[in-house]
Length: 216
Length: 294
Image 1: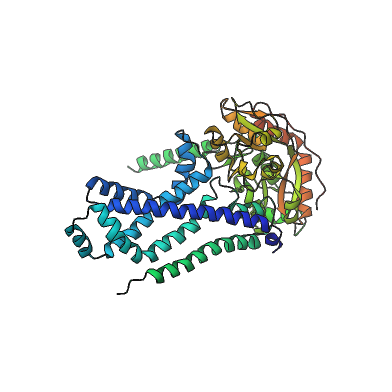
Image 2 (image 1 turned 135 degrees about the vertical axis):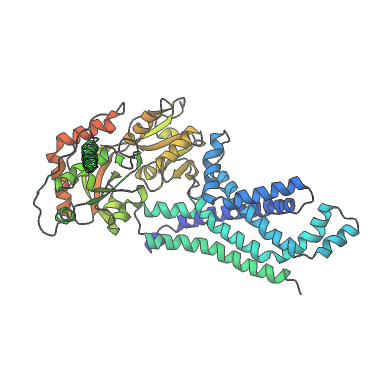
């Protein structure tokens, strides 16, 4: 295991960079996913159409394809940015479709009486959504949204293949190729790095779930 | 009726015969000699390959001039021709060679796993790799250089990379040029790594990166293809001896390869002329002295 112990500083900086990609991805996809879910349940038909088109497109494109479009397609049409930005952007776009669907299942679980009562006392659509429906929907959608976010943490490794250097994935490749270390210890170290992120997220998720559990 | 059928059958046979004769005509310009009945000691790799009648060779599929997959699904280039010379000396013709793509970072692994018999893939000899496999050769000495867009003036030498911390440098994960350029980076964020060179070349033309660095012959291939969009700058700042990767410890095979190349110097030079030598600005190399086989 000298491959790991000799390079602990590289592993640490790789871990931090991967953690950065994961956190930005989580914040972005939760925000965007909520907006798209609101579009899908809105009374305005064109917004519903937009939301459905968004989900159908991004849910059915493999992440690698979305990354290709961002990292190589955007510069082709003249939009240049850091590969880190493109990578996180692609991750956010892709995951937002899944977050939207998970949230929508939560929205559907809120009984229709809630929305009707909100209407009856005169709340507008955005007030209904923001004050009555979404808070309840979030509580019951914690498990599916949590799974989607943990899947996104693992997808962040794919981002490493598109020009984002120094994350755990690129570190693994660098150590095994040009520095010639053996595969198993290096990749075990990389896997442990990702496991720290995903297991911690899983524990936090369990805590949140217990806290917002709805007594039925 | 019967005569008609016989005539029709005869015509079909003649047609098929002439088509079969036609099929053999699209060979390469000069085919390496295939030695029919070479004698090898029992137990050597050469004997095993000769017995099997086929050979699996790892090469690059995306390197113009060295190993580039053509539309007929066969790679072409200098590395491919050198491999064919060696295969020919064992008695394997080029149709019996199975080509496998070996990008930079899997080359040691495929040799260790035994997926290929040898790797000829712009494979720079260095100490870390020599711990895991044996290198025959070197068969060519390249040097690392920089490639930039034609209208770029800011970069002449590797020190200019340190001087321009906002610029980005691109290379391939797991390659020696990526490691060699590290001392010149102002910060690790300057280096962008992809798994193949053609992604670096795309990024350069899209202005996502400013410099692509790797061995001069690989860059010369891309410059040649680019129609004036790119240029090479500066002098080569490293020496990259290309070797042929084989299983660790196989000294007989290593010595056989070195002898074969030394005996086939003419074919070696012809191979260069037909492939990488076609690019402007490259010089025909001399076959280097092989390193001792360990």
